[in-house]
Amino acid sequence: MTDPRVRQILSALNASAEEKKALFDRRLKISRDPDTVMGIRIPLVRSAIKPLSKIMSFREAVAEIYPLALKRFEYKLLFAGVAAEKVSNEEEIRELYDRLFDCVDGWGASDFFLGVIETVCKKHEVGAEIFREYVSLHKDNPDPFARRLTIVPLIRLIPAGYLPLSFALEHLESMQDDEDYYVSMGIAWTIVSLYAHHAQAISDFLSSKITNTQVQKFTQRKMRESRKVSREF
Image (cartoon, rainbow, N blue to C red; front, side, top):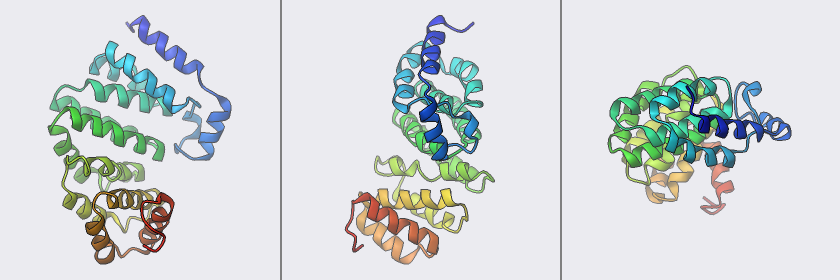
C-alpha cells in the first residue's frame, strides 16, 4: 500500500500542473507524445524528489512511480531522480539504466537524465563503467532519444573524471553520421560543453575528426550561442 506521505506529495505535484505551461512545453516538443506533458514546472519536480527519496526505497520507486512515468512526462523525471538517490548496488544501477533507456521519449527526458546518471556515478564508482557498457549497448538503438542518451551524459561525466575524454571523442566521432536532428544536436552540445574543459583537444578533434557537415554547422551554432568561445572560432 502506498505510504500516505507519498500520496500527499504526488497529489500536490499533480495539482501544480498548469495548462499554459503544458501548451508551452508541447510546442517545445520536449516529448514525442505531447499528451503526456502535464505542465508541471521542473523545479517543482526536483523539490518532490528529495522528500520522496527519504520515504521510498528503490523498489518502491519502481513499483509506484515508474508505472506513472510510462504515462506522464514529468513522472519520468520524478522516477529517475528518486531512483538515482536510492540505488544501492550494481543490479539496481543496471535496472535503473534499463528503465531510463526504455522510457526516454524526447530531448526533455534525455537531458534531465544526464544529471541523474551523474548522481549515480557520484554515489557509486561502478556507475560510470556500467554507463560505458550502456553506451555500447544503445548507440544503435532504433529510438533516436535513446541514442541521444548515450551522448549527453558525457557533458557531466567527462569533466568530473568519471570517464576519460578519449572515450567521449571516440563515441562522438562514431555517432556523427547519425541522421537524426536530436542526435546531431546532442553531439554538438556535448562538443561545445567539453570545449570549456579541454579546449585544445576539442579544437584538434573538430578539425581532424568531425567531417559531417550537419554536426559542424550545429557545433558552430552552439559555439556562438554558448559565449564560451569567440565568434571567430
